[in-house]
Length: 228
Image (tube, rainbow, N blue to C red):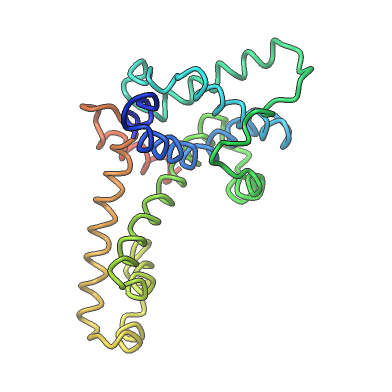
């Protein structure tokens, strides 16, 4: 994803645009959460989030990811901290984000989503990582759901998806009756979904790393963040 986004000026422009949109969708909430937890108002956080992505795009900063060990998560946080430091030093005489209307993000429900998972005990860095983890899981869930939908198995997905949070949450007998399957077959389907979700999550994380970076280390970090 990083290399694709960095190739906006190359022959694969469309692919790069899609990769850039994916980065925006995955990171706008962590960015917003960090800014809000740092003490900014809702409006200022929205403006800063827009300006952040505009800066990343306009200055082609995405090509410098290797300066942070190849981790997109760490690199974007560093850029954000620099931006906030600059903002504190300059007068806010001009409304920010005025040229960012093309960005593929919607901040309409940002405050709601931030508030739903906000914790007064989280530092800005912890809030950033927590929302990054949530968005990564959300993107993975959307990807896997889409795969089942393409195969005409969306009803099966919805029936066994609760197993991702705990096998006991699936009503196997009821689902089997509704789907016209045996209870044993539904259990097998739940097992396959969990296996596919683990693989998809690893793929999702790997796309945010430079070639050779340790995806397992990033996955461990994600799990640790969610357990805190």
